[in-house]
Length: 329
Image (cartoon, rainbow, N blue to C red; front, side, top):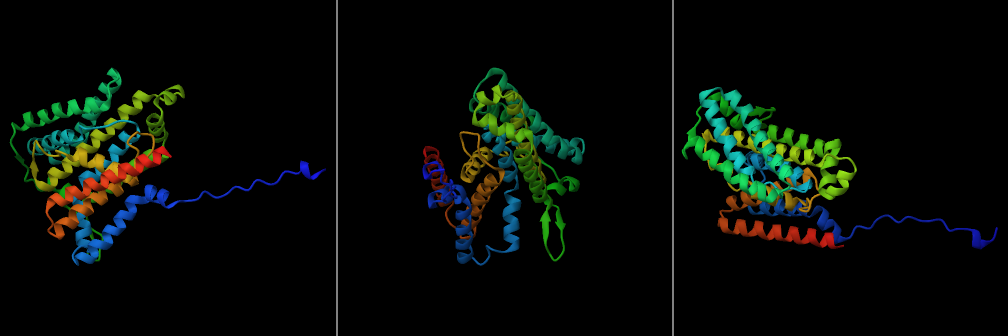
């Protein structure tokens, strides 16, 4: 055997991580760490268990909505009706708590949201209309429903059993107590992560968002997948709505206004592709945490709220720019 016939072994090189890749992949985590360090140095009251638990508790509705919205966006959709569904579910829960039963109200609100979200998905798939347009229209309809239910008035709910979901705390000993709402949020987050990462449905969602035609040809029922993602998004909005009413003891027809935009911002900040097909629930949770830290930090430092919005907007633009740069490579 000659030397010419001897093939040199192929040596596979380990993939190199560049600074730009690390920033794109874990940029939101790096920003959170820097923000934690900066706020801790600027305020002694920031890095305390009480304040950190308060951040989680106040952001619970946004965490829940963002978790579910992540599935919608990965699936190639958009849901602008979550805020309106939030409002309908909130006032419905308040009315049911007063006139029927507080525990029935806690269950009914997510179901109402689930039904409204399913209706979104059915309209989108049946008429083959972009989800942006459909949910923009249904948001107006659902918000109008919330106003009709209440005649534009607030619904006070001063029932101790109903306040349990939003105000009750679970004591783990040693002075460490966590709100029931936070525990519910963590359980919901774990469920969304399990669905996306460990189930056939999760793989189907990513496939539909990545290439719907290819997913359809491979046997995936793309319409059903879309309907399920919007149903989950609606149910999450309903759950977030009843938690808010339980905490505030007040049903308000305008509740949840703008939460859909905050959730979309959190998902984008986390690094989930706005084009669909790629993303992770934990990324969206990191995005929510970043927004919550910015808001809490600016409040503690007594900074003009305008600068909070300005800072958030700049960070979102940078996140989108980094994502676009990564897609061009």
